Amino acid sequence: MGYISQIYTPEQTSPTMTDRYHFTTGYGYWLEGRADNPAIAYIFGRKEAEGGSYTVEAGIEGIIDIVKRWKAYGLLPEDRQWLNQQGYPEEYINWIHESLKDNAKIQIDVCRKKLFFPQEPVVRIKGSIALFKMLESVNLCLENGQNAYSTHGARMVEVLEREVASGAPKGVVSVQNLRRGPALGAALESCRGLAHGGYKSTSTGRAAEMFGIKFAGTMDHAWVQTHLYQLNKEPGAPTMQDLFRMRDEGRIEELQRALSKDAFRSYSFSNPNNGIHLTDTYDTIEGIEDSITVIKELRELGFGKNYGMRFDSGNLVEFSKIALRRLAERDDNGDLLDALPSGLSLPEISHTDLLKYAEKSSDAPFTAVSDGVDVYSAQDMRTAGGLHQSLRCWHGGFACCSARSCAEGFRHVYVAPERRSHAVRRKNDADNENRVRFARKILESR
Image (cartoon, rainbow, N blue to C red):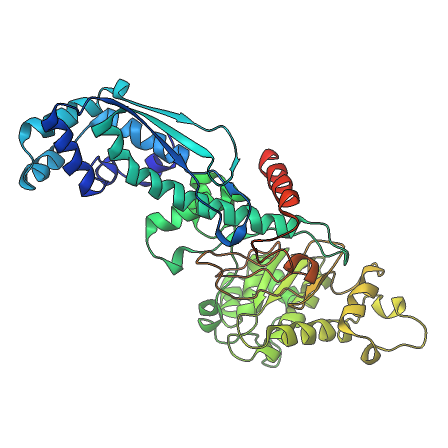
């Protein structure tokens, strides 16, 4: 069973899922006595968008699903009645039904390649001319859609997995598209194609379950808005230590009241080891400070090593720089200051140099940062220890997520200049051969 059978009912993929001219010309062949004449057709690529040099094949599984379903069901009773209402005689409709259930009348030969190039055949269809023409439109639909998603995914992975001179960390991308539409089936199909191309996770549970990829996501603005405070700053407000103590002592009602007042601490209570605070629900600068407060409380308890911040609006680059510096300035217990050269103080050091010195520190408050221009880290982007940046942008109708994050929503991966130079494809790229070799390597590793 393939992905079409997982997503769609037999009624949604019946033989009427094709264009009218296939029924009309099929009827003409039938009247001429040529409907069973053998014929062969090839599906091939024309050219890659933006001179991309290769396309990843991902649609064949869906075509095989369709043929299997047509063999199993033929025309459904409601299809036969509807076609008769369109003016086709019962004898012709019955011929279609019986012929579709005779699988020998349609054969599909598939290309075993994972990549193909302009003018290369991908699928060969053999059978009676009136029948295999019915596959043309649905075949092209699945090939064009799945190949586009999968090729997009492979190219994004290619960009993120390249070694670059700046030492920028490798990243992964995530499908975050259900709420953006345009349909439930489209959300599942796009997730399948993007995962085939290299995306590692999705925020859509059904897609994660169906395709065996990671189920990823964080808090949302509604979470913050449905608590009394983003961070409870009342005199004597419970800290993370107090909340865990209430739990351990069985003071459940008191704990619940405290959690309902405090969005950041409540989120971190339920996710003490890994999490990302959404900082821009109200005031982003205040959100940065509140997030640092909670992360510090977690770290004092031995938690919060894989924590970060997310910005969904405003000047994301500047907010990243502010967050990085505030993390350094509020680092009471770490040894970042000891890693600084003699005579230098925090105000004198750039945000990029701060990260470099943090990498030399055994207990720095952060290990990675993306400022929208460069990415600097020797470690995982997600283990920002207090800084995570998610950036929004439309990318050809597809969704991608910040490097190695599990953030919710449409995302654009901001990468170092060396990576970004490969992100936009042009027709006369000098490194086409290298890109193809890299893409093959990615696909063969799966």
